[in-house]
Image (cartoon, rainbow, N blue to C red; front, side):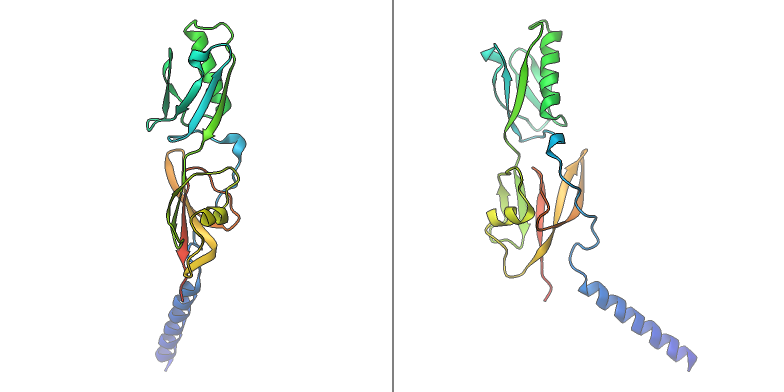
Length: 191
């Protein structure tokens, strides 16, 4: 009888564990999405920027960070932009102008014109690629994508974010802020 009770206990335990895992929400095992800080926003491929070199119209203009992470500037050639903040890129352009003896003390400013897009997938009305707007949250990205479908889990989502060349998947709530280039997946509800 003892072996029967142990077997019954084991089966009951396994059924309980399976039921508990079936009831867990999708993405519950993912780490939470890290907080977003825009002071440290790093440029990446697809970002469109404006470089203003004061007193030189030839070096002032709009540029897009290409797939290799560089921008092509007149007189300077390819300048690395990916992974730099706008202030760091301005310093890099100024240093390059000084090193090529084009200016003794150049004044350069960099601003972002258009961010790379976000991608919204899963249980939304119109999955796809959408323009990023500063301050965009998961729920505002869903709104831009036409809203939740009737099968959607509305209180959590998955965000895949590229950091230091590595894609990492995180769990995010409705109000979690997204970053340009994020891939947001809205989970399907289990009925």
